[in-house]
Image (cartoon, rainbow, N blue to C red; front, side, top):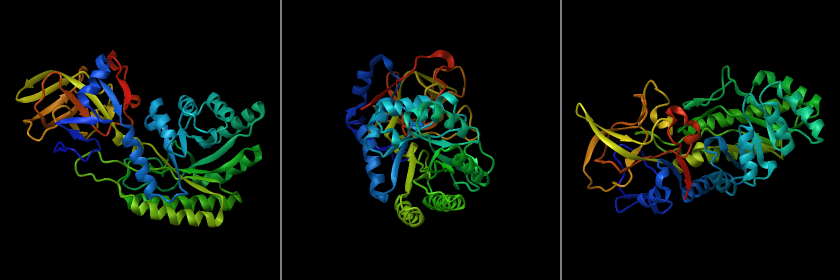
Length: 411
């Protein structure tokens, strides 16, 4: 197996100089997709292997939830539903995907700021757990429960006073739109009790995209301590404690995969600590990117080869409008290349050159690879962007310049 020299290790095998996706050569898969190139492809076997690897490292009593926001493709969610213990949604649309996938409503939770009244009513009607994020939500949930004659199940999403160190995105600590500040939670718990809502626990998520096991362990320990303190002050039992995720995947040169062993040992100790005070509690890991990110690729086709002042530009039929993250999110201050390859020219003896991969949009920001060493490519060759299973198509401005939308395939 030969890897592009610029790329971190990725999961897809290579045979006869060509990438295999779900055991299918890339050119054959592209032929099946036909005129719908560009496309995203997700590998079932890699999805299953990632969950199995994680299960092997975690205590068996820790619950594993898939956060649909990472990739809500219905076929992928159906596949993940059979592998995990629950699904987490962030909108009414994602809730419909979760229910259509056949997940038990008792194992679905709903988090996110700004839930509409219609979404809150939809959640109560479905019987799922709502992670309350403001003082506005409990009265709406109580009224929906009265109208429907159903109990409104709730947990409190807490904005802690700490953050996940070295995380790519801070979700807790300081002023945040997510959750309720920890110091205000006792008053919120009193309101939940007064309204007769069914309290089940806490959701405390302090950051994402972290590759340092020691930082993840520290945040999880602080999370459990905070939850136990809040429950003790309110004299309430905890049934579920969602500690979020934060597990990152390597995207750029020099990054290494997250070490799961210390995290598993830490969770074993934390679960024991929590159960000494709350025997029925379940610790939940809510993961999205870590479960699906490395199992997906984005594929587009070279339509032109241009040389401008000595630099080769491979112009493709895909780009920023399909894969915003790989392009640099509309102009990051310091842009880094995702791992990129010419998927039908993966042999060790293929001539290589420095080239940039650009899309068809009328902006210099439409850039998938900036001055990377790649195999010499011609029109018709297939550009592959790895680490594309999470926050790809649905996190991109597909309407920008009105080009056709790509398709997604699960193989």
